[in-house]
Length: 201
Image 1 (spheres, rainbow, N blue to C red):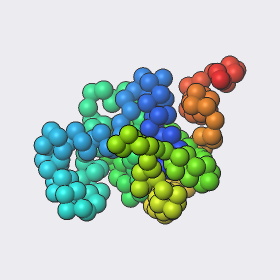
Image 2 (image 1 turned 120 degrees about the vertical axis):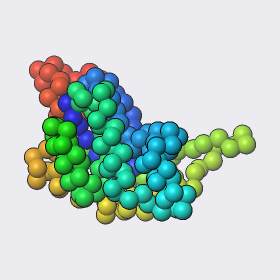
Image 3 (image 1 turned 180 degrees about the vertical axis):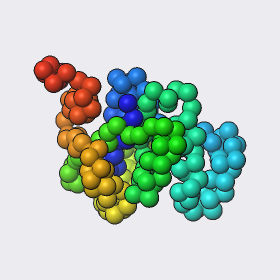
Image 4 (image 1 turned 90 degrees about the vertical axis):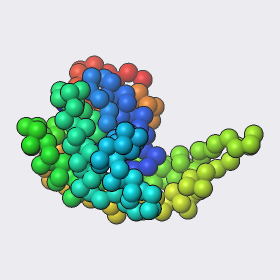
């Protein structure tokens, strides 16, 4: 099964990606992991990406897409995958579709984790980290910063929701609730759970 997972910061994408991929028996692939692997492995794409990152610039789509395409061509992704953090734009979604077509594949489903903005702000601005024995809030988790991050997400990535809906691939998942309950909703949307059986939790 080939799945893309969408959702704003704080929706629980990272957690759900690992669990859902585990239940489907496919690798969870995040763009962060792909970037780190290419940069630390000093691949040609990694070196190109690092030059942009070191300059504080966004890595161009063609480099990101090429890295993702290479990763999806690896043996463990032959039977399927769950993509987390890619695509982020409609242009990337179109390039992903053509990359998969070259590999003789296509997406089966796109899951969008849906959480209202107030809950996302509460979740993200409630995070703390330990610094010199004190629990402090990270700068990027302050409420005003969180709202800005959500605004950027809405502008750049949320249009993907409409794009995939028009392709008939989108399932929206209510991502409020216990982790296992949200996973159950996602698995049901994927048709991987038996709808006759009540969701655990």
